[in-house]
Image (tube, rainbow, N blue to C red; front, side):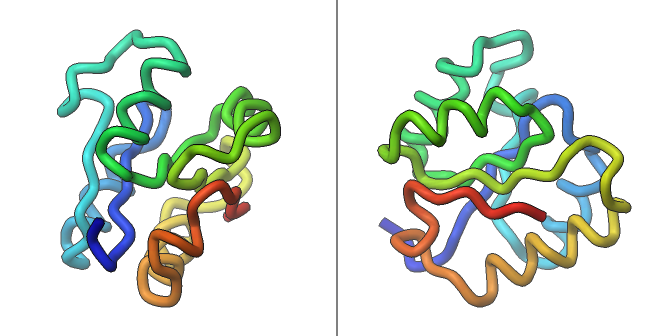
Length: 111
């Protein structure tokens, strides 16, 4: 396992967030790059578990999943349109800078 958090952006998250994170040197995959467009939440979960990536999402369903199990690498959640893209990026960079994967595992961080 890497000592740095890696992210996975689900399909309802703005691509501008992914671009900004990559410009900051952060490893982030997307639903499109993982060929998961239209996949179920459980398929997305299986991917992030396999790849050990924290999922970035606006999808409330991941809050339910995270409350029922703790075997996921972590969820970075922000309610849709609750924050600007810049605010979300700042929060994700902060998570990347101060937490390690073990600290994020099984947790939800609200952005």
